Length: 87
Image (cartoon, rainbow, N blue to C red; front, side):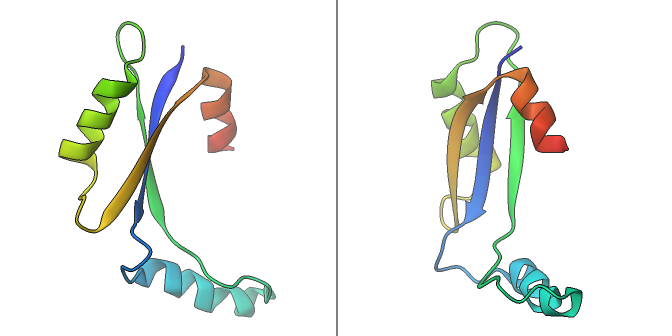
């Protein structure tokens, strides 16, 4: 069944302390070629009928993201793509 995925990220100008903590820990793991890390959220929405991208954007704008400090994208994925994202 197709799902609508909403990816929410802090706007580039907003400080991301979680991302900075991960970036700072990477050299201790032997990873030295990462310039920066940003942490976000992925929300999957399943509609009872056909996926509705317009409705999903409305949900994201009003409920899932804070438009003052966050940007979001909405896209349709097939079931096998959501399984790949969890691997």
